[in-house]
Image (cartoon, rainbow, N blue to C red):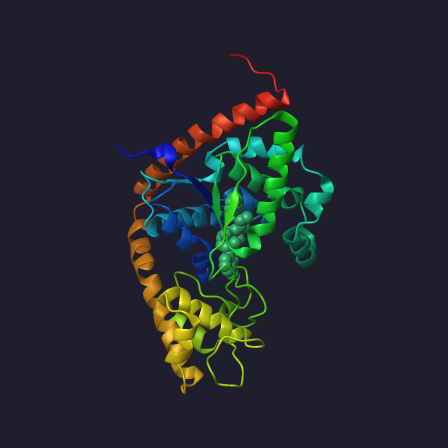
Length: 335
Ligand code: TYM
């Protein structure tokens, strides 16, 4: 029999705000898959988080289903791993409210993502956007999580999660486990192909800046061909070579080659050859995911069965922690 006791608990989530990019994939999703066999994993579609940008309801529903199918398409086994939709597990919103009351206004206001988003979109600065990190903290703390596989941009949210957990534990005794971020050595911050000083993002208005994991091979080739590089025409990793550094990172992630090996491979060759090889490696890396996604998205009944199974399993674990936290803060319960 499997020894589930000794397994580490892993949790992560992704917002259904659009098809994931190569950045989401290399920074997070690929690690989700790699951690799935040896750990007790909880992976969620963070639909509640995406309400902060008030998506069109029909589109949100569709994207939630697509994101869920994509997670299974990674090769996650819905029987072994718990793959669920965040809003299907009530405990998330409930614990988030409790944590709101144990989070200082000032510490939430310091979050870089909140500051960036509210500057960029002053018309949608809502309370949800402000409280975003406490909902994320609830996601993580509900499962007594050991590791949270994320890209570098989420590390500040992990820090605030730890601060909140520590404050709560100090006040009420051990309630939450202290989670650790798991950030991959390469690919933790994949940059935009058009402006390699900015992170690749699915909400980029310039579609040439990002590769979506469902882009057709010829689209991937075109986007990588038009990626911004420099005028030196030499492939090596170095300062002032943000575009090339980014492509080298992508290539390294997709082929498993080191930067030294890549430099040798393209010695004496120009960016044309290099870009063609990068594009090819991305196409090959994404091919199984795309094939599996096409199969799964056509099977709504299966997806919904898996969603229900995931929600039941997640609720079982989450409610245990929720009950504990509710009791600790003094919420009245009747047997
Ligand atoms: P989201 O949906 O923006 O992104 C999902 C994951 O992808 C990573 N990522 C990247 N990694 C490398 N390079 C990039 N260019 C890049 N862009 C995105 C993100 O770091 C993330 O790991 N708040 C989270 C979702 C969330 C969550 C959670 C995560 C909700 N609850 C609990 C972990 C634990 C978010 O918006 O990720």
